[in-house]
Length: 375
Image (tube, rainbow, N blue to C red; front, side, top):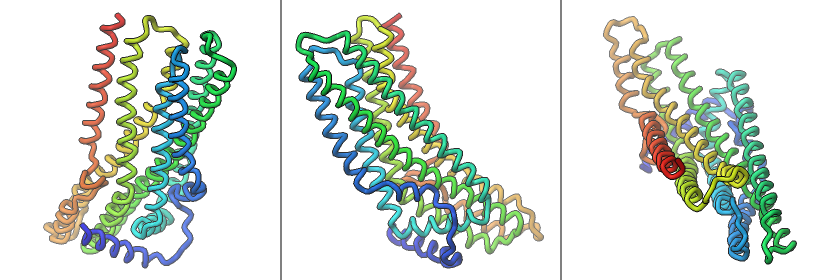
């Protein structure tokens, strides 16, 4: 493994030396990461843990008061606070490593000469969508806490004093702040990851376009080796973040399904306002899982494009009827097993479909159970 990493690094250095020190405008979202102060992830991680502990203490203190969304609020605060701080810290350290820096320089050089305007428009459109999703998520949490405060105003017990009310609302504001900050960091990381994947996708398109225009199969072997090194270097550095986001999102989904079931069991009747408060409080967990599956799908699509390259090369016309150079290039690409790897696992559309089948099975089982309980 070490020898392969060294070989990939040497190949990337060779590519980068061909594009000497030009200031390319594409940074694939890494400039956004550099704008985030270093103290924010640390403060978010510590604040989310302390906030969750304070909310647990508050819930135990006011055990006689029914708080409908508190369980989801505590869990989402922890998940988003820890996930956001850890993911952004790992991405910062990865961007400082030589392999990813060289890969970024190579991708910027490619994008400066291919699909530049189209790629920039797509990135701006994706950034707007991420920002809208972030604002929507924050609004749902504000509404969820507002509904809970509205319910508490009509459920004050004998031991619920104005001091309790103030502490409860302050902790709610801290929870909203932690989820907003954590989701912002996670979306920033996802934006950078999708930028690298889109850049790799465009680089493969550039390679195919060059081969179709100038079918030099001998040169194609060397250029595909460079492309393979680019793919492996990016995947090796971003793979840890993929695993982290997928782990947190899977744990969140399991927790969401389990608590939905227990909520329906413990409620004698489904009231509209409490149910909406619970649903909005649980929405960040489903949002995180959807984001993870979207990243998984984009990486799997990149792998599928790599798998289609041999058939494309095989269809390129050549002067010789049986071109040995073309046959060698086709075999070389097939044997390279190029794609997006996380560790030693190759992300393909087959694994993506298996994930969807598993999720759909869990959701259908939950809906079947709930329908037998409530109908």
